[in-house]
Length: 137
Image 1: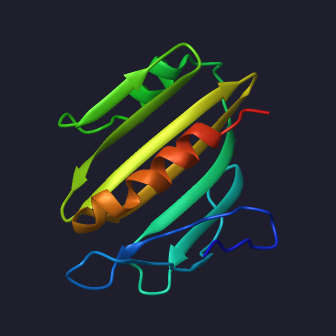
Image 2: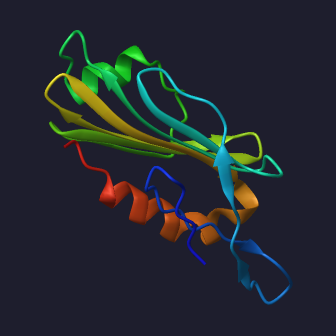
Image 3: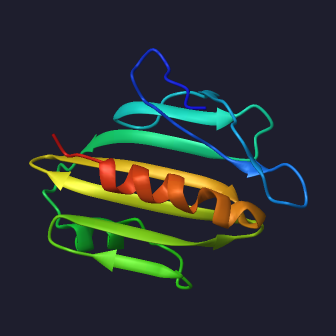
């Protein structure tokens, strides 16, 4: 089941329900505002969160320069940087974190997702769909 909050963001979450790895939908509730423009969401049990935001790129940094200024951890598992976006992901404790930011003019449009490492395969489709749907418009 897909939930569509008032702001039009559609999100589908999944988690294992039993040994056969059936998926059950979860709800993301608003959980405050990030820097810049956007919204933060969290599951009711706090196991996962999602931030969708657009922030000013005041220094007009390239994706590589912007990412370097954020000081990502040295043990990043996945990193892709192009002239238009960056995507990075790794583990922090028992969580997976994934950040993707697209660059458009003076704004950086990002999706930041954190979820339990034990649910990584269940979240793969969600992360991929959200990452590919992120627009800088």
